[in-house]
Image (cartoon, rainbow, N blue to C red):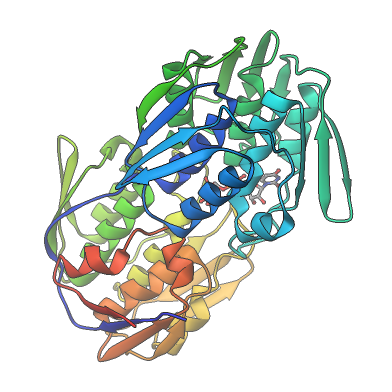
Length: 415
Ligand code: UD1
């Protein structure tokens, strides 16, 4: 298994470009299954989760060709609607296939999805939404069987604004008969990207980015060429890394409107942030102040940046409190950071962090994707060397994180 060997005590300086967003690319790739034409997607990051989605789509009969960061996807010959358990288990995002396969073939069989172990991650909201559109869904012995004579638009009101369930509902509704209204929809920017993608291929979707999305069903979707939005979580991670190391970095290919909650906290901590077009300059001070953070659905502070931010707060002055309200089991990095000298107490979904002067390098293992990123960041500021094991978690969602950080002056070896 590959590891990162991180040399501590560096300062990040220079310019770096953010990749396309994993969490936008995955549902958009799944949505291409609804099209009867060719889709060209630009800025698709090279990640394990994306490769996994490519494999599933090929197995269903699609042709998926990668040329650099461009994917050319032809789903005309797709006939498969049954996804093997081994592939489903690899990745949570495989649940996105429910909506499009139901929308196009009116049937689908898949096992419960896998992914990061950050909580139970049920799919009741996905199922409720699809049932509202006319699907009959049977669950049993780890499998979900869904079928529908036809899908018909309806009103869907979510109890909680789930990102994945909102996207699945949109994907099932886009070819359904009549109009669908999704209330208490998630407002994440990746949902706006999915809406824009559909509209570029002849869909009629509006309201994404608000809590009410309208979808007028169309008969078919045509070929399109589309550019995936920049990854706001990768951008946030690079901002936090710079703030941690007291550096001065320009991060390009950013939509800063998606990062207000993160920039706000970094300013409170003491960083100076300047937005210029599609770039952000962050100039960090060596003195960092502790802050309190509560993760929330967008536009609140993103749960995916909780772990990197917690890493930063381990070396901030004073006491900080982080409340994780989205996922139940998202403090797995705490034990590893404690082994590096951090002072953190977790009670339920709250972590109390008492800032220390320095962390010290040791051997740690990435417990999940974002927690893994957080440990790499801790390694950048720790005294000595930090070995981060099980980097395959990190490769699921950060495109060559070590190369990006090394281009800014970090010293990280992949072995
Ligand atoms: C997506 C993102 C993930 C991010 C999360 C929250 C992708 C591929 N992943 O995950 O990186 O951390 O949004 O911003 O885009 N829930 C239910 N029932 C459901 C669905 C969800 O109870 O049917 C709960 C979950 O257990 C969790 C909360 O809702 O506690 C949020 O989940 P959701 O918004 O659905 O996240 P994902 O779409 O899985």
